[in-house]
Length: 323
Image (cartoon, rainbow, N blue to C red):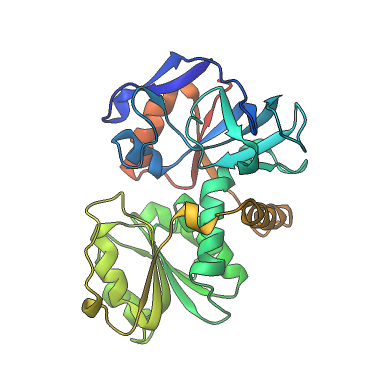
């Protein structure tokens, strides 16, 4: 099979399409013919060794959707040809993958495979953020970083369904429309931590009830400044810059900080099916729009990484492994 193989750590140029052994299904596994693989910012971290599973040479990518091609011993409830999606399974930048059966989600007949692939990491992450990390209520206010990005758009839409006022931050003027389309009540162009005064002005000096910050080290302390008393910082940007060091006595206003890790917030099959099922229901009802803004053939993984790191993109990027 063809796969995007990383033979050394480094920049996007280390991603090369190579012939790779076809996987065989072990006990409890499915082999899936991949149709679409999600491109995520965490993949760029894997490329330089952050959170990489295995040693080079290795196939990266953790998210995708496709059709079951083979079924391993002890697996029930699946048939060859079933469409499934997954996240947090390394080796997804390829034509085939062996995945644990308990880590896949059956794709409903009325949900396209590309939409299922696009919603797994960003959608599940955003869903956990707004239902558990910071479950804001009607009339409360949130600040969403990168509101035109994949996770930011999802968070914004899910917050609006809960009746929350959303202030969105975007990196450029031309991304304001995307943030507004996702439901942001106000959209501010911001670079690093230059948004504090404007956010406080929009909240009559009170600050916001929660900040969803994927901006990295450059925005961490500014995000804390705009929180009101007992507000919540949902932080998920450690791959961008140095990870902040926090002393407990430095935290003002009795705020709370949560660093969301996928393995913790979707830690059982029951939760996986529950969160994914609710996302699919919202997509079906037209309440949640999944914006796929970049589609690349498998051989263009390098370009996909260049684009996502440049911050020129918004929405979700996918590799079409059939091309």
